[in-house]
Length: 545
Image 1: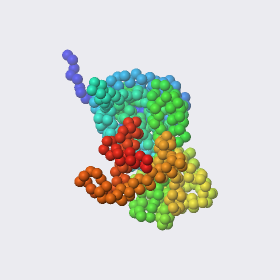
Image 2 (image 1 turned 180 degrees about the horizontal axis):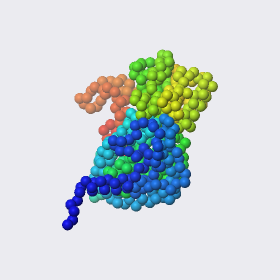
Image 3 (image 1 turned 90 degrees about the vertical axis):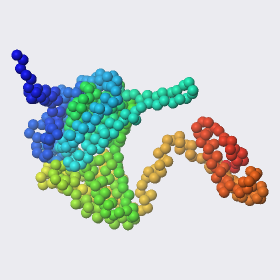
Image 4 (image 1 turned 180 degrees about the vertical axis):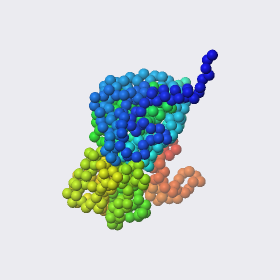
């Protein structure tokens, strides 16, 4: 007789099969929603990072490996492969094979998968944050904020169904024009080290719910969060090939740029890399979205709330160890606020630099020894050029983690330095510069104060008038005002021939101007027209406007 099925044994076998199917993708991903790293202790058996192809974690056959160290201790965490040519091609083959069926999948079904994906990210929130803290060095609270910002994009993607509909335009009684929004195909994302969860979540939800398949290249410095996101996507029900993850440095980037089946690239990172990717990708006919390095400046005016400003400056300048694209690296003190510089240094000194898992840590280490060396060189250069160091963070380190990449809070007053200190850099926020100048217009670039300078060149060309043309315009304005004065000067009986309307228009020249503007707007639309009402006034003003 057949034996009754034991549901408990079936569940165990299924769990074991799933564990074999989705083996640990990397050291920090060998965790669960309830069990994840909580300390910076040395990893006894680091796990090599794998590729993610066809919903499977595939061990790389790479011959080149990149060691990834915990920034707080410099202990080895994992090895990241430089994916081989065969593995890079396999990722594109997988995405290409999955695209037709995924494109044909209804938007409502894709939406249901995204709902599940968002729920899984929430369940694994702390696990993702722990991976970021271990690999990137952020404090645990800051790492949770990293996940939150990406999660918000995924939540927004759930409601995209009403934003991707086409349009119908009735152009005649028997004719209409229809527009449709269709996915591009395979899209790729090249992600930076400073937001390991947020930047992949800028691409995965939006690209997939709109019917595209995607290839993600996380930073070789901290791929763990992206590998966990891939695991969660498989659990949410995304079909094989919709999301693929490859690894590496410049070689992988060049492959993404030159592979003709990849139709679009999204990049976040430094200026140099971004310009290279944008120029080469555009030359290959791809759509390229390049978010390049930034350098934030803050101007402190005398009428601000002092305490609020000092707290905001400290958080903006030193949060995430200054490794944010919009970190505050330059402070412009206007007027009497120039005397606040010592207080800013004192407020910064109160921040706690420690390992990201430690209670009360306000900032952690920088990403690598090379980054630490570069920052210290910037401080030394500023000091050599005459800057006053109000707070020096060189040589500071927590007692518990003496081998980490530590640079403490640093505040400089580079009044007499040259341009070398304030050149934009891929690590904004360290060091922090205090500029004490007045007036404000002498400090900031003129182009930043003039939004018009960012308009297209052909728009600017229309706004530039030849000297003779400017003279003619000024004369028209004078004649227009003269027309208004002359109308008021007319005798009472001649002001209007409209019978009972004997009172003059309170601003007759404004009436002329209104109709003239209507005519100009019509010309710009390519449909020159002249309203019948007020037409005579327009023609009367034609020579003087």
